[in-house]
Image 1 (cartoon, rainbow, N blue to C red):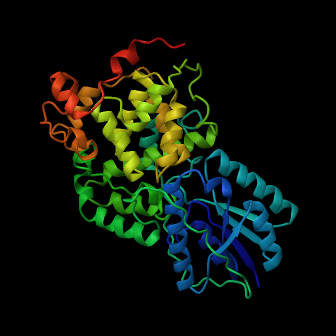
Image 2 (cartoon, one colour):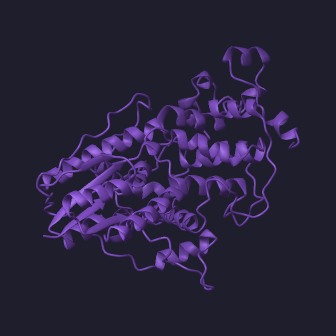
Length: 439
């Protein structure tokens, strides 16, 4: 009997999972494996919690089909070889990915599979359109989003795959225990897993999606999908979600955001150092100011629209997309502090923290990445008036300003001195920060 191993990474689902489908189609017995790599389990409490809940749900789904999730601790390539020897497996299936870590993992798997005469099948599944599929007229990967978006819309997407009816584990295979959940994390973080992801996705597709085009930048309205963490861990198939959204009223703008996600995966696949090195040649000189960075990180800059975003991140492990742009712009363009520090802060807290999207967006805002207008700037007050005109977003996350009216809440520094003292809210640091010169 043929046996295959499926190494789950960022595809923690049974629906439309090309790696799982390929293993079930090719082999009689299937070993669904998750290798617990300590380097990925300690950095971000929100992602760790979401991951463990997603693994629990995946195990339930596999058990409902007669299988199980085999959990081992150690380097993925070593655990694959160990299980292949134990189960006499001939094939290993894994979803391709774009990050530097994923590339090194795949290279290690290729070496070990070649040494032990195992067939390695790398499938799609992490994006709607695979990173290397779309090319500009000169044959190079797209470097600017708009032409990529036009090509993405016209691309022929693969068909979605049904979940397997049956998963047969080799007899005597020990499943192993999932890691225990640690402490910490945001109390309002939604539950992880494919089951919860599709419940949220169906509710989104059947209603709020229709108003997404007009309302997705409304900070107080919070009319975004909040499906990012489910996509980041592959609890939802991005292709299946995009296909559903495309057929719904209002789906065009939502799928455009999914194209942005694919675009940054494509960029990262061709430039794996995206999280460490400026994509655009000619590195800027950044200011070193730990006090300013600490104030930004704590949501104590004195600029309400900026502070509200950073406090939402700390409280929820999530930040509204428009707020991500605003807070990143403030750090890199006004405080002139290195985007990599902001990237790491976001990455430590975001449940949907993803190397490609996180680094791609930070570099885009900082002017070091794929922004075709790298010198463009934002006016913080204009952003506040346009996207939080009533001040509802600021009131939600900055309770000390909740008593202020819509006219004053974005400009508390203009209030009389005795009122400012009672509010216990800091003076804006923008003027002093912007006047300093880089070292």
